[in-house]
Length: 322
Image 1: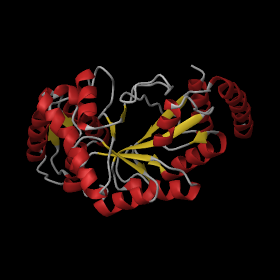
Image 2 (image 1 turned 90 degrees about the vertical axis):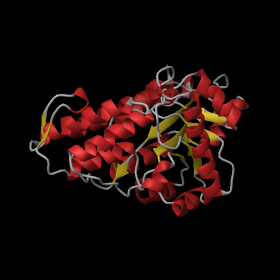
Image 3 (image 1 turned 30 degrees about the vertical axis):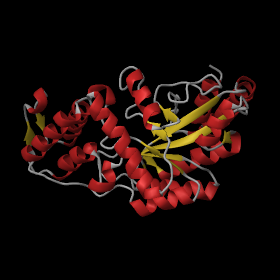
Image 4 (image 1 turned 120 degrees about the horizontal axis):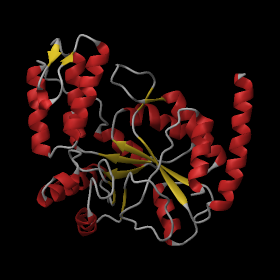
C-alpha cells in the first residue's frame, strides 16, 4: 500500500513539476528554514530532522534551479530569472546552522543565506531560548497567574508544554523592555537562571562567509520592530549590521525582518530605515514570489511545511503556478 502511495505521489509531482516549469519564468521563491538537528533533545524542540533537511535539499538540487540569494536578486533586476528558481535562507544564527546545516549544504554544493540576530553571539542564545531553558530546568510544580495566563501543572508533560507555548507566544509580542522584565520574572518564579550556549561563534560565521554562504543581519535582540520606538528599531537594525561587519571585515547589506509579516511586524518606516542605514535588500515572511517588479527591501519568502519530501515539492510547484 505504501509503495502505491509513493508511486502516486511521484506521478503527481511530475505533473505539477511540468506545469510549474511553464508558469515560473521570471518568478523565484525564497525558502525559509530555522532549526535543524540530528535528534530532538527535549519536548520543546521543534527542529526539523537532519535527514529531512538533507532529503529536501537533495530534491531541490535535483529538480529546481537553486541559486544564492544575491544571484536571485541580480537576476530579478536584469529580468533573467530562470524557471523554478529557488534560494535558501536560514534564520536566527543557531549552532546547528554550522554543525548540521552547513555540512549538508557543502555536501550538495548548495549556498544559503544566514540571517543572524547578534545578541546570541554574546549571550549564547536568544530570548525564547531563555524561556525554554527555564521550563526545561525548573523543579517548580506549578505556574499560576503569570502574565494573566491560566494555571499550569508543570509535573504533567502536556501541561508543561502548553505553559511553555503560551508564555512564548505572550512574550513574542511584547516590546523589548517588557519582554526582558517578563523573562526575568519567569526565571525567578521557576527558580532557574540559565542561558543555553547554542549559538554560532564568530569564527564559525567567518568560516561560513569564507566558504560561499551569505551573511545577513536580523536585528540585535530579535524584537518585533512594529512594537518598538523608532529610535530602538534603528539601534537594533544598525547594531546587528555593525556587529557582523566587524566580524567579517566585509559589507553586510541584506536583512531579515524578525517574524517578518508585512504590516504586522514592520512598517514602511522600517523599510525606510533599512535604506537609510545602507541595506540593499531585505526579506519578509509574507508569502509571495520574487519577480523583476518586487521591491528589493520587501522580498517575500515561502516554505512548504510538509515533512514528506514529495509533498513538500508538490506544494512548492503549485505555489510557483499561483
